[in-house]
Image (cartoon, rainbow, N blue to C red):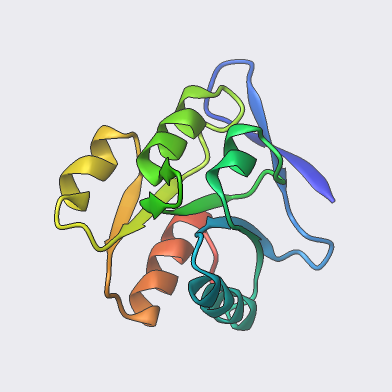
Length: 142
């Protein structure tokens, strides 16, 4: 079911999708099939409704359900995840939705905030830290 959630802008709202089961919706963008599979398992077990996207084109063309959070890999085939973050933060419909960037790049601590990301996670990371960060930005209690 779709709900309207205040977007923090006067007179503006961002449509946010919550699944029928009430799970928090997150959109994950990663082009590595094995990483996508791992994310799918991690977030399903943690009680999230994860939409897994394998390319940046889907984000740029706005072909996804509005989530409570975007989780984007920096290094995508043909795309820089930071550009996807900038695209999302430039849109009135998505600018209030948190974006967490994931990268093995040592510069991610500087690059993510400059692209408008709300947070970043450096690879490698502990699953517990990933879930803690996602929970922090989705307001998920469990």
